[in-house]
View 1 (cartoon, rainbow, N blue to C red):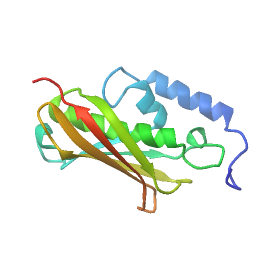
View 2 (cartoon, rainbow, N blue to C red; view 1 turned 120 degrees about the horizontal axis):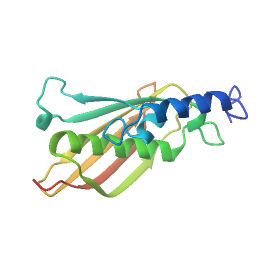
View 3 (cartoon, one colour; view 1 turned 60 degrees about the vertical axis):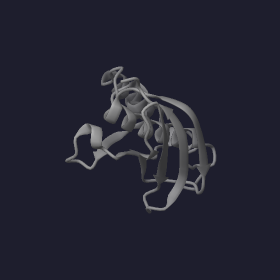
Length: 156
């Protein structure tokens, strides 16, 4: 673990965070329990575009002790989950609920602390299948992971 990281997470803080996530969740986009547990904040860009014309879903979340692996960096599973969510929420915003068909993640550098940003976007948007990517950056703005995915689009 990082030298300044605690050897155990703050159990009282973890319980309080869990209770907060549980108390405010709804089984809906942006408010489902896992998104609240990760601490995700959502933004769709361009902000002034109609939902069908949104191009990016940007989400941010803090690196907390609960999300660190034993080496002290943000766990790859948390990174992959956030990137998948950034793409899925964009699909939902522009067309309705879709489904991840496959996803590949390349981890490039660890994120040790601070706020993480994921930006999900279409690389090729189709009627039944779309290709997407999500880029995850740390607080320094440097890319830490890249996910590419194929999405099944909702039937219109």
